[in-house]
Image (cartoon, rainbow, N blue to C red):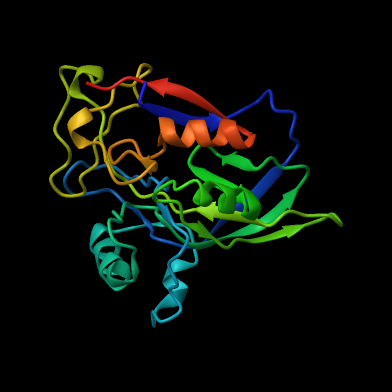
Length: 238
């Protein structure tokens, strides 16, 4: 297999726990006029983004659902501040993770399946192996212990999609107004090989952005360097 899904390794024995949210976030959509659905994702996150230049900063500090017109207006306020290749969705997180952390952490930390944290030394070792697309961003985590690690959040861009063969054959097209797909994550994922990037070793899927994907090069480097804390599940592609 050339690609793998990164998940939490429940057998690792690490006790680390993080209770945090991103400093700013886009609102969810309240009753989309196209599909009549109230929803928000939140698995797309861009921790490198600094929203302090935005005048209406307070609007990004509270989780809520808003009319789609307000959501679209807020997207335009932040779009030029995003990293290249970023895609927005309702509930997307922006800026550093803020919150509390405790326990013993591994070199890699799978957080809520959607985000991936890494200790600074581990990131530097991976980057020295020539892995592509690894960007560590600072966090604002408070530790209630004397010896605490420096945890960075990896900024993982959405690239690549699932293959239609793993999706329901009778599915509705995305909402033309808010672009919501309304599909559950398939039990057996199949990647669309024609959409997968060739210039990065870590990414998340565009259509199911809670799925973090890495290449065989990433897995081999972690195993060679002894970096644990996460599990790798092979993903077929077509």
